[in-house]
Length: 71
Image (cartoon, rainbow, N blue to C red; front, top):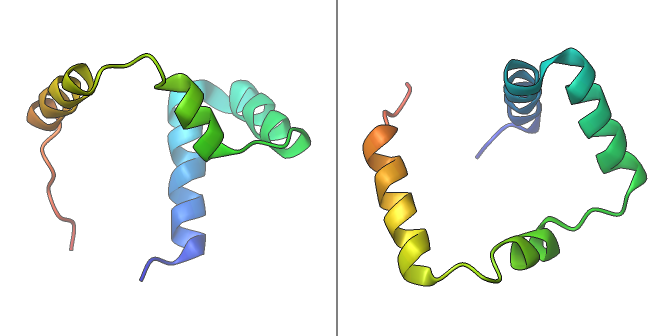
């Protein structure tokens, strides 16, 4: 089972590392003020993506970022 506090900490770290402080704040404030449905967003975002293309990109990502279990 995953600990919510750990997941939230990692998520914030990821945002800060990739967006910086200001853009992280903007991202969070937009998420909080908008009714954001991640599932609906995914449907819209991927609606024109062919399955073969998606699988190819996923396989390429897996090669470039191999999973290493952290203990």
